Image (cartoon, rainbow, N blue to C red):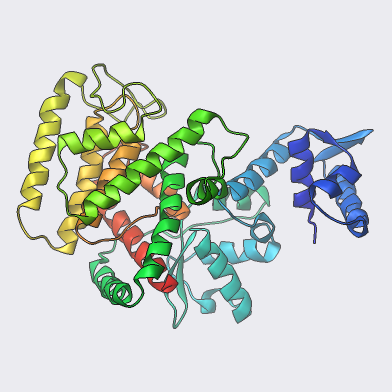
Length: 408
């Protein structure tokens, strides 16, 4: 059934259109025309559109906000009609109050509870802690706050607690290793799906405009989206190639070296000049001047020091806690050394995965719900906090493992 949000999005993307053209765009039969026209009248009454011969969007704050919310959902493979439902918004409002919640905290029909938690988990906005009983954690993301504000509903998020999760991760790793022996082909399929998710996530944080569905089609089926620049498409393909190389190297327990890091960067950034080359000028993070990168003349010394610390780390058998802690440290230190003109953050995520995966921790994706927390602890941070990043990394690893194990 067509919703008013479907109709609005078609009008907004078309610029000017007619009711019959909206039905055609939505691929709906003539029997749906009346419903579509009723939505047009409602959108007109609510001040989103105007009808003056043709139908067009009124450019005001509410229409622009709605368009951004719908576009965000489409970019991230989310059903905006489900997300905008009054019942879903009420669910989110109640779920946000406690860091961990069950159906007892929300009190809705069990099937509805399962539907909403499953959808939010699929979208990367919710972590399922346990299945029996179904215990969940809603993740703090600006999108949730934005939709609540748009629909004039208040939301107050829980205050997160820093928790050690290595015991839970070890438990999931045992399940993962058992599943790998039984169904290796299923793992390979999930791994390929995870690659598209990681590439999309990492590059969207850097401004690449391809949506998650477009990235998935490009990577898995070589379907090239028509509306994007060639450089944006090349950026995705280059990063996918670098990811494949990293996974192969990590699977063979290849140790990181400056030359290997330079080759990762060269592959990742081969669509621009300066790929694989250490910068010889100072740079700043445009949107965060508080994030200090080192002077270009200090890069060789700092880079060598970091690699010596890495070699020391790799010289001994390490616990799971030590591995995750060092991966978080390496990520933060590399970002602050900032050895390249561009591509430092996406390279730091690649290196972090190399460290984890070379120690048999199969992290791949950075779920959507962690975007804000991750950025606040990395290049959007005003103060470095390796400890907080470590705890966040533990939670992401746990979420990834639970997702992988459920898919077997």
